[in-house]
Length: 203
Image (cartoon, rainbow, N blue to C red; front, side, top):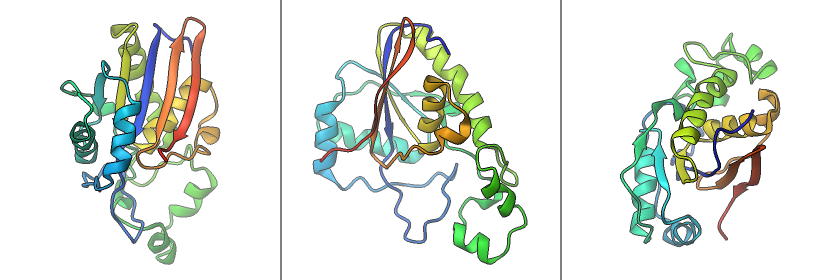
């Protein structure tokens, strides 16, 4: 894919959602844990001061942005791009993978055989996520030429951006680890895309 303009895209996954049972969050609007002040201070020093701010609209992204501001990062009002929301896992949302397996969910075997293209019941496939994220990236790259763009979003969204930038199959993009509060940098350049770093974690 050719980028429409030169930009630096800073993709930040939101802070962790507390859930010892490991349930599937998907599009559920769940709060996150922003208690790690040291971590946010490192991020606040790392991120650009003049970026356009974009988020998906879920509460965990807004809370992450609030914690960045509290750590000293001045940010403009966020642009809400609903198509950057996490993958929709349909009726599996709020359930744990092990409970679905224990219940012998009939749709689960096909999903694990084809995790990039299979559609969870009532949800969407990861391939579909890529196709809804793509036009947002293209539009913002064209509208915000030459700008830093800070996106606070989700693991699935960031994997989709990597699939687009690297022009790789959805199956390959799912192999990327995207931890909570990790930073991924993807620059659009005249010749296309350049991946500067993936899953950078402050330490």
